[in-house]
Image (cartoon, rainbow, N blue to C red; front, side, top):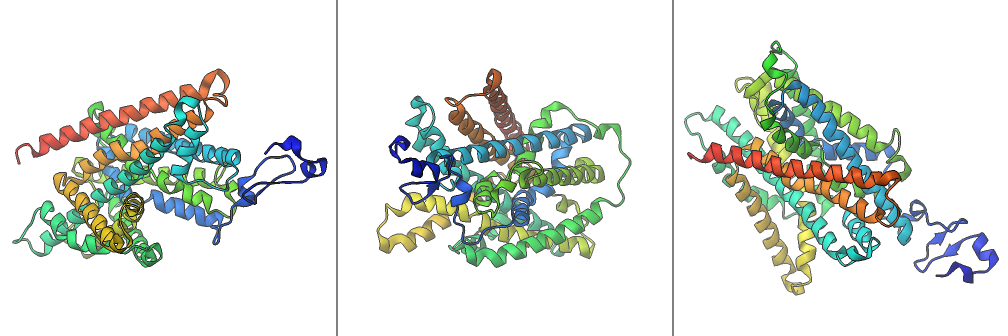
Length: 452
């Protein structure tokens, strides 16, 4: 629409677009005014949603992460990862909002933002817009599938710890427990509607909360004296800390849905803002748990600090049972998003009468793949490092940097091109995490299992 063709009375009031939305008196589109959310989320509710997405089994892995750096680098590294993760979320949301204004749409999803950034970006990149969308979708699915593989090992390790206590003469390997839980996991992921998963989410949150309280009780009591060997360790193990911390803190896959459904989305960014408050709280909590868990158990700390709790006390055993139940129910919740992504790719290729069978097969095969990966790398600590280095860093670091760079390339990269230089540094950090994290994790895996 050419605004010069409008009468003065029209330009002084509003402009009606083809989709029925209107421009304001200054001829700018405000996406916040056009979002029609049936059940908008309050600012406090959005804070708890974002907090929930960032807190999970990764919190219990932070003491093991500190083992790879020591106290001082661990604390500094936790703060660094939190700042970088927060900044990447910030630039993704800012880019999405700018694209909403430019395209006169109320909201954009993560994948939509990636596609629009390239479609509206430099001419040479526009033909890649659909490819970057597919890349983002597959990265999202990879994060969920890789994360659920960690959940499989988490559940299997907890079950082994519990059963070894009650049945000491009939011990099984973690791989065996991965196979045992395959059928229950397949059945749980056949639930196809999110509303039916709400009770499982509620139960999982209660179990995680109780587990966290019990774990803190054991972790913060009887801490031994701090030796110089705990202050810092060799840099060769630092990559495993970075990939584990990124796995633990990264919740960018749920950021856009949360921001898009806020009653007052202006409260998401800024100072204090939902994002900043949440990430400060998350970074502090992860740092405290990682620090005190490492101080308590030292080099003996395991991939989940719950595995270090005593086996001969009822309260500790309750925590181990609760965390196994919580992660089991969280598994089916985390599989919901990748199943939707994969089904959209397959649905149009099947006739209507095969849709039900297709859904069952896709879900069954996907769960089986996560169990196979868990069996291949049954070490919780190393699997977290590998998944964090490959999938979580790609979704949380690489893609936001690419999206912001493509969007701002023709619109200005700031004074002295600071946006470009900043994104180059972030890209180098991503490559550091990817290469060093994969190398460290795979090297440890080979060394650990080459004699098996």
